[in-house]
Length: 255
Image (cartoon, rainbow, N blue to C red; front, side):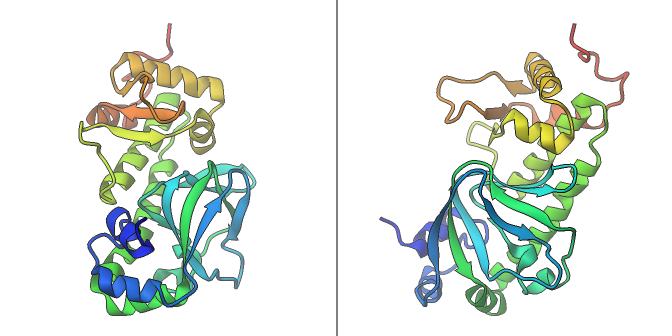
């Protein structure tokens, strides 16, 4: 079985390529723990006034982990394996000034994560330039993800395309995607799309049906790891939908 240092160095954006000897020494110093986060159970409430958390969560498998805003119960953040969450609530780097309104953090599906105490994160941030640059970049990606969601119009094809473009940009920037065949693959339930784009479930299903007809996404495959797997086959084509107005998407509404 791989050690935690080997696991994160191989699979996680923050630690990929970092010297495993230094990493193992730090991660073996105590407090690092594997955790299984179960679906629909709160992990913590983010952005509480004058409150910081004490661990960085490294997502290994499962998920996604979501952040729900209130009172609209809108999903504003999605974290998949290969990335981390919790940075904006640690008293480290931009986390000291990253403030928003209280939002619930939970695993949408069962997630395997590694908890890294803030003191270890601080040491890495201070001593390792690669870690520091990547850690800072995670804050930028969070802002850009939410920027995409701000561009969700009430026009359903554009709203769904905005979320997919946000995910593509995020996962490509993290080096997690695309797959070897050039496709982008997400475990993305209709419920997550609906709560992110502020659409009802039936409308989302109709948009996805139209996108499949246009070849933007693929129909479910027999070998998909989940019934919620969504494969983006034409990421560039989504750009046209993302920037479309009502008179530019001729396949909506579906006949």
